[in-house]
Length: 112
Length: 112
Image 1: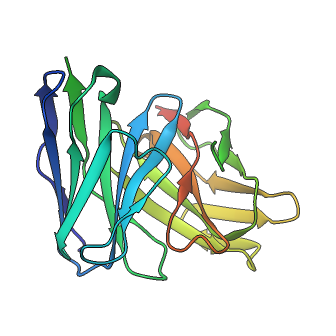
Image 2: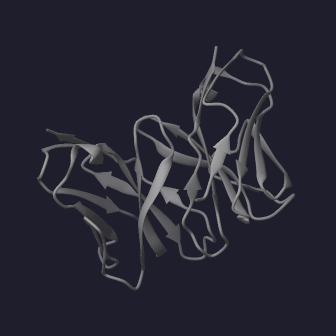
Image 3: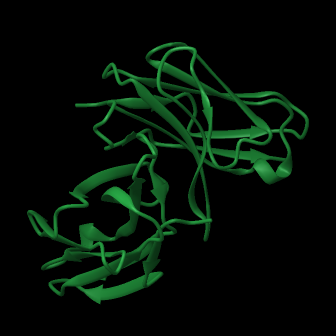
C-alpha cells in the first residue's frame, strides 16, 4: 500500500513564526504536491515537484516555499506565518504520467 | 479560478438510494478523476476516466464523461452510510503535465 505521511495532524503557531510541514512518501514517486484546502474553495495547489531539487509554483505560492532534497521528502515552509494561512494542508504524491495522486492525512494549521 | 465545479454542493439521501454528482470544467483535459474525502482526512482516489472514454465502472461507481459538454457525472448506486463523505472531481489538463485542478466538492450524506 502507498503510504504518504505528514509530520503533524494538528499544529498551532503564532503570527510571524517560521513553520515547516513535512511530507514523506514510501513509493518512490517522482511527483509530489502541496495543497491547501479551505471551505468553499476546494483544494488549491501551492507548489509541486517533479524531481529532487526541482520545484514549480502552483496557483497560490505567495508566502510559501518548498524544499525537496530527497526523492521521498517534500517540505512546505511558511517563512513568516500569517493568520490567513490558517488552513488544512494536504500533501500528495504520484508517478510520472500516471496522474493518480495519493494523499496524506493532512495537517490542520492554526495561526494565531 | 476553479477548473472543476461540482453540483450539487450538498446532497442528502437515504441508504439504498442512488447518488448522482456532476462536475463541469472549462478547458481541454487529458483525463478526469474523482476522489473521496472523509471528514478531516486526506483524499482517496476513486476512479479515472480518460478524455477518449465515455463511461467507466468500478464496483458501485459509474462515471460518465461528455467532452462536448465539458462535464462528468459520478453515480453511486445502492448507497450506504459509509459513503457519507465529500466527493471531488479533478482534471488533468491537456499539456498540463501531472498537475490536477480540483473542484469545490459535493458533500454527500447518506442517512439510515
